[in-house]
Amino acid sequence: MSFRINPAVKFLARILGPELLHSAWLELLEYLPLKFEPPESLEVETKMGRLRCPVGLAAGYDKSGKHVGALSKLGFGYIVAGSFTLKPRKGHPKPRIAYRDSEQAVVNAMGLPNPGVMEFVKNFKRVEGCRVVASITGDTIGEFVECFKIVQKVVDAVEVNISCPTHEASMSMKDPKNIRELAERLREVKSKPAYIKIPPPVTSDEMDDVCKLLNVWMDCGMDGVTAVNTLLVDAPELALGRGGLSGRPLRPIMLKTVSRIRKELGEGIEINAVGGIMTGTDVLEALRAGANTVQIMTAMLFRGPNTLRRIIEELISVKAR
Ligand SMILES: Cc1cc2nc3c(=O)[nH]c(=O)nc-3n(C[C@H](O)[C@H](O)[C@H](O)COP(=O)(O)O)c2cc1C
Image 1 (tube, protein in one colour):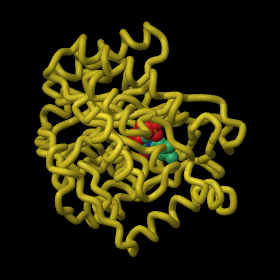
Image 2 (cartoon, rainbow, N blue to C red; image 1 turned 135 degrees about the vertical axis):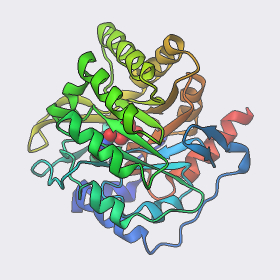
Image 3 (cartoon, rainbow, N blue to C red; image 1 turned 180 degrees about the vertical axis):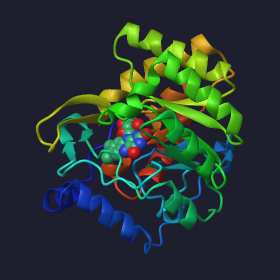
């Protein structure tokens, strides 16, 4: 099952640029009467609670967390807001998002712009029928722990992002010594499920490192993993000259990573699959590879407002075959 990039999205992105189009769309969403409720047969039980469907919205779509209420009406099982840091961040210079239409991919070097974790918590309102996860990140272990403590008071789970490819400080957390210290300190404070978001392992050594990291993470009483974040590539179309690649090219890496983690770490670890999931067939493949839930991001940028409804309809039709 394939899809074409929504022609209206393509046209508007050319005129406004992808970042402005995205911000305008999020504001507009607050006023549109969109509503979709997935069928009850798609409900799944997870450590963050019962989800009305296994498809979540990945971190980075709603970076401020201001639009969680409007986005929840689209039918997601859960929404990951953020990533949030302890203090507000402006992010990298623009342009910092570009479409690579022919590859069904996006490159971004947003640099984690966000209003800071306190602002998110202050404005947070619970939403009907949809779980909310906060993605957090930082420059130091202390910052991660502080963010976790603050945000877990309002959300259903926390995603710990150590894999933003244009933010070197958070990436350094994947060193086994750092990950143990981070997980041990989180264990002392944690009252909500914790998922670690990992970078895409490309070589077999990187895949082995991911499994080692996750063994430490799970040994310290954590709950699961979100696999995978974007892949660092050259991006001359962005001000930074490099960025994280998302969309179709990530799909084979995501599938390989999910099945290896499930095989190596067993049933105890909860896996949220993300990377190149754009159709109902992709969802089914990721679940069959061992994921408990999936998340989408680039598909939402390319397929337009009815993305989730279409993916759910496709999922139901491929499951019935
Ligand atoms: C514009 C953009 C911004 C993103 N921002 C974040 C972020 O703040 N935190 C994070 O953990 N992942 C972020 N991501 C990564 C996505 O959550 C996801 O892991 C990645 O895009 C792969 O999924 P996809 O192929 O469905 O897009 C971002 C991705 C894009 C395209």
